[in-house]
Image (cartoon, rainbow, N blue to C red; front, side, top):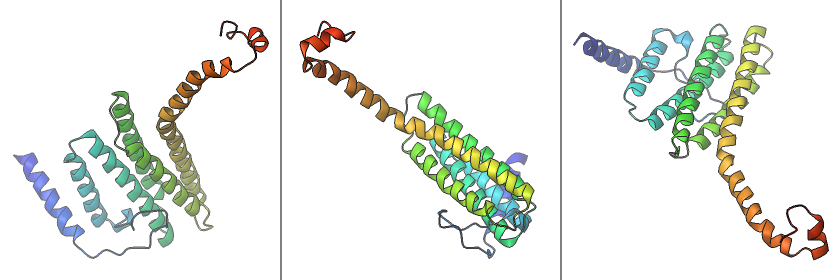
Length: 210
């Protein structure tokens, strides 16, 4: 009962604070939405993180959770860009670490789904597209002269994380296509071999009897 009361209280606080006016900054052309609060906003941002946890709590399927993690990761990138614009550099590194964890969780869920031979319902494609957009934003932020060296180093490391994750996800997306191409080639080889001159087939290992 005490835990339920805490949950209800947290939900009420999150709702009330999220209803307060928000100062937004124009998001990058690569992002789907402008950021809300950032870590520099204190308790208002804390309320936003409670809302995120509640959304996860009420996401009952693995597919829903994967989408939630991806949405949260994109929000972290929007926050980083907003803090860079405001010149609030102090919490950029910790926000990027959260981003890395959320992307990792989204990918791990997608990996588990694919290992059970169940379709990811297009999530792999959405994850890959999101990773490319997020990397593009980080690349733009990293080139700003006012960004301190420590933050630039973390940004570049996070870009590598995003691109490496993209490569893994994209490889899985392309695998069915590669397999089909290989299958098509294997099916066509016997027919093609019949079109070769007999004297040539005798000289090629594996085609002698065709």
